[in-house]
Length: 203
Ligand code: GRF
Image: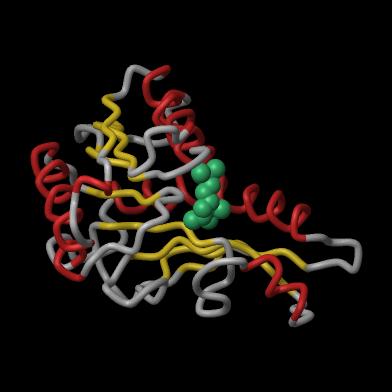
């Protein structure tokens, strides 16, 4: 059997997707190893999760750098040292520069809380309700320099009900995310995502 896929996770917040990835690895459902978790927030709970799991945790303070380019250069240096095969964005709240993204074509994944290409950016649950969408869900995609616009790898959707609120949608989207993110990473590990045009629906 091949060795586990080396992944580096970038996270700014709670890190529940990170936890699901780690748990999937521990349960033998995902052949990967989280080499490090990097955050731009020193108080990100994701860093604490990493420490509890004995995973290297790294904080990079954006205030130490005059602009995005310089911050991303520092991030790139850190990431390059870790030699990941895949970079996994899990609630990383900074937009990566083209300089960073172009260094890792089809090797950076992101999870987004909407059915892309609908609702790029923030506040997706509110927008779904405001626009009266019939369905909502989550998308795993490769990262390209254009925000939330890279090739779609997996999506999971569910019908929106009249009783839904932003909070209930967030919870249901999370359930979708926890299912499709480890699967997408495993597909990558298995070498099944070679085509950048590939799109797999699992509804
Ligand atoms: C997820 O909803 C993800 O779609 C978005 O940020 C959230 C991160 O949640 N990019 P968590 O930090 O993994 O709990």
